[in-house]
Length: 75
Image (cartoon, rainbow, N blue to C red; front, side, top):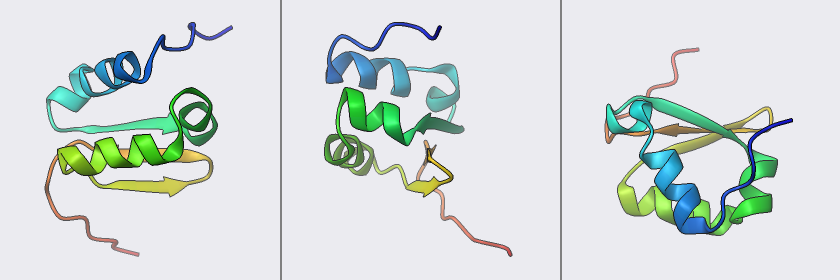
């Protein structure tokens, strides 16, 4: 069984954006269903936008680019 759900949206964001990957400007991902269940799509996208982090959705995952670099699709 997976870890317990976050206590609050604030805790969810602290865990997500406080991760080593996020802090170093890398990429993190979360299941769309988990985001929608715990905090809601709009709150999640608003927070990512506030931080200037692009988000893409594919195959039931949100992929968050924890930096402000441009994204280029190559294929």
